Length: 272
Image (cartoon, rainbow, N blue to C red):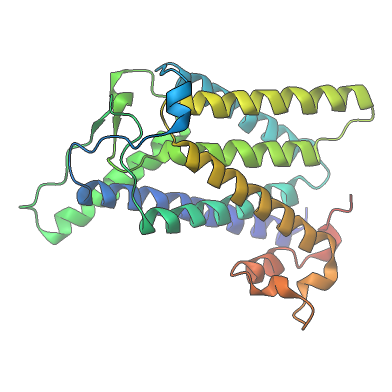
């Protein structure tokens, strides 16, 4: 195993976790800023789809299935380390974009059946405030990776919660699995693609049913995820785009330098 490939994959994973934690920190901070008793905004998805609390549990189980499927691809594919690296980088870029948008505009919690976390007391010192902020951020990040099947699951931070980026992971997992899953039999590949497509669409609908996301969040996630995925892989498959030139407009993306660094081991580039 090439040591450089492994190290770059580890760095990519750290980049992903750092952006996930950044989202958690912003969520906790905005819980302190938004006015209390904010009502959800009108949403066409909420008008046509009924509320079901258990829907979020089905989404979590489907996310677990996608995670296991991705791990199988990472382990069994000849270029598993590179695929894992690309997943971490693209997901990190996307959730960083989510963090920027979250910092720009905070929407009220999308489910008025939830109640907000209590705010950090105002009479604490700066060190105590930072400690409490850090602790809550780690708890919110941990919330993303585990299942909550009790009443405490109904408690969210006002303005947002970490489940808002679950749609991003579902969309990107679908993109990666349909791109990198290989089978010599056309029937198996066709069945796999269709089942994955229908299940992902069902999960997106369940996210709306659970009132975890506004519909605009999901539409925005779809647009950003698909564009980032396609542009990233277009640059990877065309080596000329990995060098600055007058005809290469991709180098204007803020993450282009990241791509060049992580894709510089040319012997590992996948040819489709």
